[in-house]
Image (tube, rainbow, N blue to C red):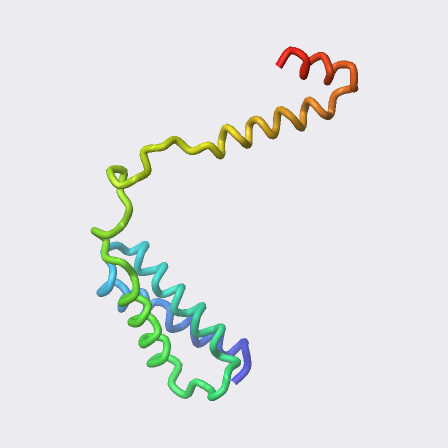
Length: 117
């Protein structure tokens, strides 16, 4: 079977996979993500030996294994669990942008600004 045929077969299976994925997830968006992840993993596996003989069973099995690996919804990070320390990255990025702008100025203007800083 060639790549075009596999792609068509996987696309035809997608609605069934999303319906099946709804059993493992709490929302339609999560079900679509789970089905898509299973399709991608199977697509990457298609070129390996031995060949997949029953594509639908293989994709459903892969999706089931992925669903079992996902953390339960209550284990997800919430605002209460989030770090209390403010992130430094935005400040560092802003400072780097300012320094790039200063270095783009003519030398006399850059020295003047750096001297006042």
